[in-house]
Length: 287
Image (cartoon, rainbow, N blue to C red; front, side, top):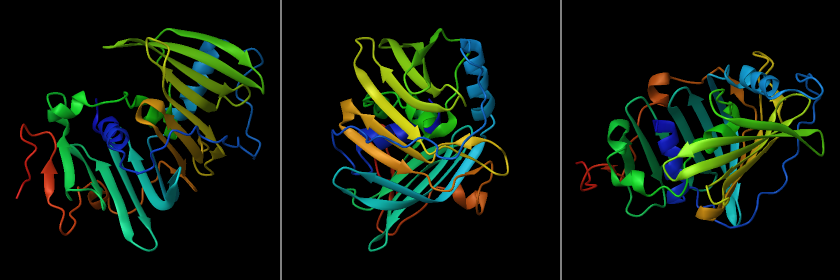
């Protein structure tokens, strides 16, 4: 599991956003600006895969400085988000009254998270090469791959077995993918727009047919410089973790990253929050 996926795992299992709640996501509005047609009528599964992958595989990075995070019964946080393949991530969120509230990220060596209200305070981190043998690997409620996809970079693996596309109401198509996991075969259901091939919904079910996670994406927008398309709003629901959240990405810039890369991908330090290695055998604090 790479660092970005590991980081999102911690995000879900630790409830870092403090957005816990069992409510289902609200409906997300689809794109409002007409986008070019990319799929023929009655497309084959190969055509759907080609169109989805052609757009999303070209998204090597993205960034936004006007994102918003919200959830049931929780205040809205202003956020900046940056991502770069394969495993670099930085998400910082704040409120106008209290300042920084969340800082989580991943670089080539390790991933980290800091939450102002976390007790005990600390900048918690783990090196990628130590995750597989640490206790952190054992606390996963779900596998977080779908969370990465939910942000707008989902691709179909052409080597996996896909079923469909099955026509749905509202000009949508459904594709079902069987994924082998240590817990047994899982099923991922992907709903795409029948015209533009945009990924609108994703759901992951375990081998018993239980919903592990679902996401709804909308407000798709074409980046004026690259011509690539990403959603601007994503709503996520994780029944096992009793977690739901809404991420408004705002004005996403594709394949353009802001600021100093060295600062962007460096684990931060916060006064009164010592570094804590979550993947050491004793989870000790480093002085």
